[in-house]
Image (cartoon, rainbow, N blue to C red; front, side, top):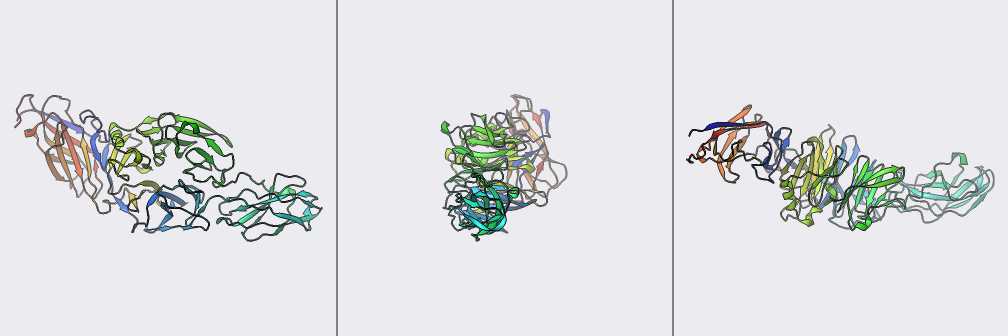
Length: 590
């Protein structure tokens, strides 16, 4: 059949997914279907596989995941569980011991963690006090103050000057510097000149983390301000003597070392403080003391608007506070002063773990869309396609969505549950440098995600799946623990700038590296799902692969090209060429 030849060269395939509008109206480098391929620069790349790094399922539901940094590029993987917290040892999750006096009831609510220096703090909705977590044990955070006053009496000869003295003591942890509020005040001791003080009644603590006590004393003939004079480096000794002169007194005792409130839901680390929320208010710790929350360390975040605080995220010089109706930020206005500023009063936060930051950007899932902010206002970043996918997430499941950042590929990774699923079953991938989207399917989509650095400065993305109680590493390996990864990309519906004319494809060329794999190429006409022609070709040659695939006998006004790949090596598709014939308007179809 005669006709006018045409040729379309596509050397930029990095536009991402956009099937929310008619395939004929998207950009040439966008795709109407994109599964397990992702845009990387100007090319398409098939995702790598995933591996199950736990050799056996944990004995109960996994509810979250956290990276505990032990040193430079040295990480310990921790997971929250229904009735506690576990760590990964080799390929096995080992439950941490629960300290005497600490109780943890079973719950499917997720644990949320921070790390400050070499300790972790974890909170979970309706789980009492926050928990201090080491690699081996979980205990209640905060140290209650001693309930009894010490006794001070005149000792033997010493260096103190004559006067009236009062003393208090605190319970202390030498490892973390956590300290309690002071004990009740001793009765007055009137001391003669050149004496020392004998202390007794320095009670021991039942708190699991206490391994020392600290003694504080007034200056002579004063009351109400107490200064450090001695530390007992055990939780056994109840009597001692001290002979510190006023010039050698240490810092004043703090009355802001109260234990954190109970039943907190959220936690974040910002400005050397732990920030907590019970869903209604913000609470902040003393600087450098994440377990100490002073009586007045509270910020009300529009408590009368009827909406809950759903997420916290450190964001450079500010703290993002997501409520169900708005996004706010906290800014430092002085050593102990903070200012609350509204970032967006129209785009609230749907799920705590979708609030993420990368390269100065803030991302979050709202009830209607995915948003990002550079610090002023908020912009929706979802395509119509992604909006339609989000519309398939039941309201009850939106709060369970989760996200993570994968800097190696500039990804914001969002896990959601669609079409009535009881757990997350689809990953939405947003490239925050190119603004492109794609979707990933997995046999088990993670319920929670965490990004790790390895000793060789590599990057690892881990996830836990609540239902099967395993930990997975994403973006690695050739398959999904034995299941082949099938990647599919369907192009725009091209009319080659000749609307109304019927066209037939003669050949297609695909630019890929040389691989001992195969690629299936399909042609669709006129935005239908009926395959007009299909061929599977070998990729075992360098450069462009020429595919003779004629649809001249089944012409259409629009053509879509679909590429499907299920090989064991990641595939880069760097270019696509379509060649064909433009047929006369009224020529019959053969």
